[in-house]
Image 1 (cartoon, one colour):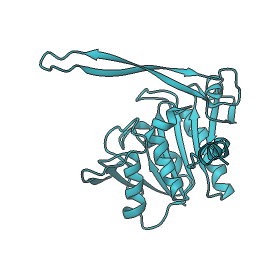
Image 2 (image 1 turned 45 degrees about the vertical axis):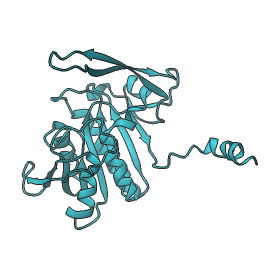
Image 3 (image 1 turned 180 degrees about the horizontal axis):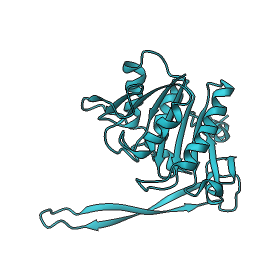
Image 4 (image 1 turned 180 degrees about the vertical axis):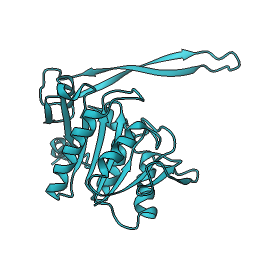
Length: 255
């Protein structure tokens, strides 16, 4: 197999090293990721300045490694359209430092890299561990990621895009894998004002609190993670609200 790895924590993160360790068991690996952290960039692409790419040798001569000056989506686009001579059989995004549950996936560069693969009909898996610790323990993440990847490869299904979150606990404490839905919730932001002595306008720093709108629902990614399961949420690109489609059609066309 030919496997492409990207992420949003940068080419130098511990998580991408763990992803390479996993992927090497399944095939030929190419790594194409941002040269600096790109968290919360969502599916942004670079249009107003050129992109630079540098080849690195971080994981031995058998793994091709490229650092891109752009976003995760830029990285996957460049890899697929210019640097890889053959279309990969699988795209792995991660392993991300920090969870991507609920609405977090809308902001996540990790998820965007996987979705970019899905746009090209390539099976894609976004992997995250629920800690921002740069020196996180990836034992459980590597074990369950390998298990999930192996089973996805066996299916030979092309139309797959998965958002996987692994709890940041000892592997013995994880109860298993739970396939579930994205939790309904939202971030409620708070902005802190900072007055700079040499500026007339203040600076603003964003903070916030996540609120789960369905804490009792046991079929959500947040419930799974909080109860020590690996959450797996299948994603799709089509954002059409089909429940509202006919209602809006009647409202706007008076049918």
